[in-house]
Every structure is written in C-alpha cells, then in structure tokens.
Length: 81
Image (cartoon, rainbow, N blue to C red; front, side):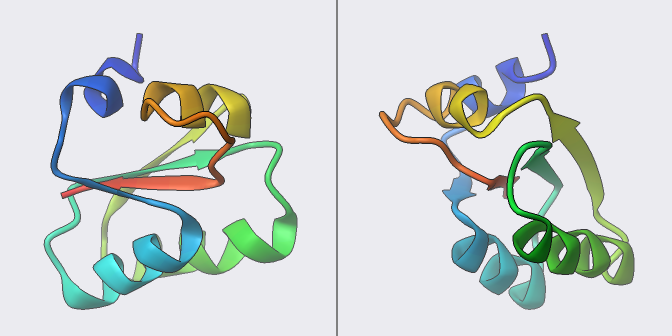
C-alpha cells in the first residue's frame, strides 16, 4: 500500500499551507494529494510540485490521507520531508 510511507515517516508536514511552505523551503521528497480535495486547493500544490520537481501521488480521499497520518480529520495534502 503506497500510504505505508506516510504512516511510517515521522518527518512530514500535514495540510495545504504547511505543504506549500515546505515546498518553497526545499527538502520535500514526495507529496500526497487527496483526489476529493477542492480543486482550488490542490492545483497550486500540483504546480509547485512540478516547479520544484517533487514527485506527487494522488490518494483516493482526504479521510484516507488523514487516517494515514494518525489524525481524526481529513487532509488534502501531506508532504514527506
């Protein structure tokens, strides 16, 4: 399962604002993006990933991504550092 990386990696940031900051700062290895997140939230992150040449992977839902991080709410994005 691809989300094992998220579960097992403690060096991560959760949430769109934090992911944007981390991408701008550098050091992001991979970004996970929830397919059901709002378009205006995820499109800028996809563009930043392309700009900074960071791999991103789409995940089925915000709930699945949030649970993989061990939080009780959904998350649109997660970045592995």
